[in-house]
Image (cartoon, rainbow, N blue to C red):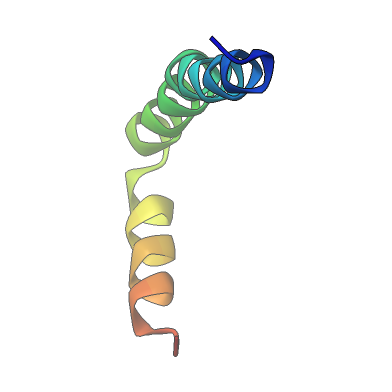
Length: 50
């Protein structure tokens, strides 16, 4: 296997693992602690222009 392909696959795997370990629990915590703020944030994001 090419060395660059191994590095790229490691990069993708690390990004996925960090997403599950950090970003998913953090977002879940914010949604559970402050649901009204999360709903307001979602409304603002949906109404933004692309």
